[in-house]
Structure formats: structure tokens, C-alpha cells
Image (cartoon, rainbow, N blue to C red; front, top):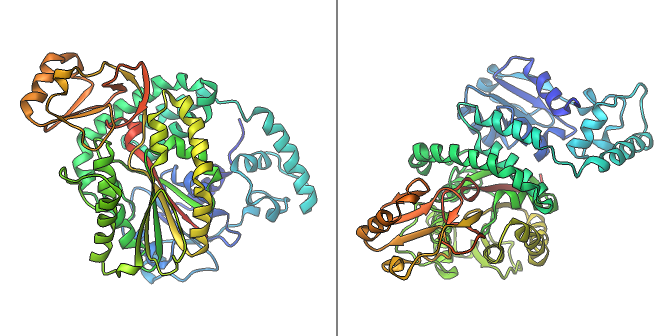
Amino acid sequence: MENSLIKAIIKSFLNYNAQVLIIENNDGFLFRTDVVNEIERNNIEVSIGNNIFQRVSFELRNKTQTLFLINKEKRIYKEDIENNAINIEFFLSQFLTEYHIPTLKDLPLSTLDKLYNKQQLFKLSNIETQKEIDLVMSDYKITESFFDIEDYTKNINLNLECDNIDWQELAFIVGNALSKTIERNQHIELLDSIKIVNEKFQEFIQKNYAQIKNSNSIKKPQIVSKILDYIDFNFKKESVALIVIDGLSYWQYCHIAHLIPGKKKETNTFSWIPSITQLSRQAIFRGSSPLESYKQNPSNESKLWKEYWKNKQYNEFEIDYKHDSINLTNIDVIKRLGIVYKDLDDYMHSSKDYKDLIKLTENWFERSNINNTIEELLFHGFRVIITSDHGNIQAKGWRGLSGKEKLGTNNSGSRSERHIEYSEKWLKDEFLNNNSELINSIVQEENSLYFKDDLSFSRRDHLVTHGGAHFLEVVIPFIEITNE
């Protein structure tokens, strides 16, 4: 098996045996989003922001982890940080010796691994380096379509054995695996492992969901209701565009990520549970826990967005909201821009399975023109954040509700077939008493019932929907994009 360039770099850093490393990196390699993500998957916290952001990272650091403060041109830090850190300088050429670094520093990590394992005896020019790149790329193309199910299963099991399971890491592993295997029907082989992941996730949610809803949002919004607080604390002096793609799951993001422009910091947040639009998207734009009395529509969503930012002392002319029809003229005065794309959720509900949805996702990406929208926002100096209100699950039909069972239910503004809400508690209790086989599949919350596995209130054998508490519905992308 090949040696990994990133693992070699991390090992060299950890050999300093310091809790905080100040790393000067002027070739910019350590600022790459994929590099940062790989480092953070090794129980290391990475901070690449400005002095204020890195100060917050230092103060709030988890002392069981190593913290990397990465900078360019030898940034000056306060004395207390310097006293608790070791300063080092990093160059990619320390590991890819003899290659022409400007020619290869932006290549995919998989290609850099190939070059790292094919070290040269003599210094290569840019042309000679490119020839080596072409050679390893031609070899890679032969095997790139292969998906290693054994390696995937090993990674899943290793993560599930940890005392504190990293749901971001699991979302990345499962999301990438699904995006690579759906079109070849190989994703069927992943279902058993996803079931195990979800069972562990349900245990975690049951114990921690109340705490997550009240979590601190300074470093990361752990749940969608904290997204606006996170933006407000961290980016007061920046223009921010929040793009909410209705129904975008983590695996769908993985499938289109390479098409999205800009430098991306990829992490996750949690949907509101149950994962219905009326609750979860409301929680995003309200910036707090959702209200049951709320009616889901673009007009009310716009009001929530504008009220939140007005309460943070932004002027009316500095706030805007757009729904589906995206016109970016006259945005230079805007400081807070909310954008909702709804069509992908419609595609999802029309799909019978993930094989349908993956093609529809590609089609949506092209038709929505979202990549050009992001490019224009970046050009105008916006920090762009992409998230979703919920993911989705390829579900199985349990059975449809009878006419009697539907009596007293409310639609909750959702087309979900995984969630029902009764007007009276006794109606909910009567339904469960008559269908006791569902007890282990259902979560009860006041007068609501929703699935935590892959069942649905449907007569169809297969469908794609949302509204429950499954891992694939709840753990959703939270992506920050900049030009930095």
C-alpha cells in the first residue's frame, strides 16, 4: 500500500510533541481545503483565519487535541500564544524533493501520493515534473473507478470503535462512498454498514440532542438553528451569502463538490429533528428553535432573515433574501444575503431511489447555474456558506396510513412520508397501540411520530424522502467558500 504524503507531513509535525504549533507556510499548501480536512481527521484542530479567529481557536481549543495555527510571512502572535507554542516553517519541497513544486502543488492529493512514492534521484525541471505527473495520472485512470469496499468497511469500523465518534468523519466516508458507488449499484453493499452507523447515531442523538440544541456556536454551528449566530460572531466585518439548498444530503454534496468554485472548508451541521422543512429551514432563518405555529413560505422566511439581522444592527438596505430566482445586480451594498434553492428537493421527492437522484442532482447543478452564482458572489467579496435544511434517505414502504389513521393529523408544511403529527395525544397513542411492531422504528415526541430507521408511511417499495432522524437525513453539509 502506498505511503500517504499527508500522513508523513502530520507525523513530522507531531514529532515536535507540542500542543500548539505555529506553522509558517508560504507556498500555501497547508491552506488547501482538502489538506486541512485530512489533517483534522487525525484529531488535530487547524486554524487558518485572521489573528482574531486564531485567538478564539487558541482560547477554545480542546486540550486533548493538537492545534495548528497556520500563517504566511511569519505572523506575529501575542506572548501567551508564543509561550505555549513551537514555531516551525513548512515547505512542500521538504517532502516532494527534486520535483518542481509550482507545477504540482495544486494537484489532487491522490496524485501527490503517487509522486511522493516515486521520489526522484535528480532535480526535475517543470517540464520533467509534468512528464512524471502524466505518467502517474495515466496509471491512476486505469484504477480510479475501483471502489475498495474492504477499506471502506475498515474505516467505518475504526470510527465506530472510538469513544467519541466523529460524525463529520463518518459523513465524509459514507458520503464519498455513496457518491462513487450509486451509479454502479455497488452502494447496495454499503447498506449494512450504514445501518450500523445509523444505530450508533440514534444512541448518540438520544443522549446528546438536547445539549446540541443549546451548544455554543462560536467555532462551529452544531445544528442549523445556530448558523446565524455563528455568522454573526465570526464575520461581523465581512459580507456573507448563506445558500440553503433544500434537501441536499452529504453524499450529494460529495458528488458535486469538485464542480464548486473557490476554496472550501468542508464540515457538517445537524438538521433539526424531525428533519422536515417547516421546522429545520425555519430554524436556519429564525436563528433559534422553530415554532410549531409557523407557516413555511418564502415571504415568512424572508421576514425571519431580515428580522434577525436588523436585531444585529444591520440596515434594511444591507439585507436581502432570494428564493429560486437569483438576480445578483446591485449586491455591493448587501452585507447579509440569504438564498434558497428549492428545486433539488422537488427532484428528490420524484425519485424512486438514489440511482434516479444522482442523475437528477447532476441535472439540477447544471440547470441551477449555482456555480456561476458562487463565482459572482466571490468576485464581489462575499464569504459564501452552503448548507441544507435536511438530507434524505432511500426508504422502504411500511404501508400507507388508512383513512382512519390520517384523522387528526397535520401536514406540518411537509411532504414527508416519515413523519406524522396528531392534533391529540390519544390519537398518537391509539395509532401505536394498533401498530406495536413499529415501536423500535419510531421516535415519539409529544404528538409527533417519526422514523429513525429506513421505513416510511408509504405503499411504495422504494422512495427517497426525509422527515425522520436517520443519519443520512440529519448530518448535512456546512461548507464555507472564500477566495483566500
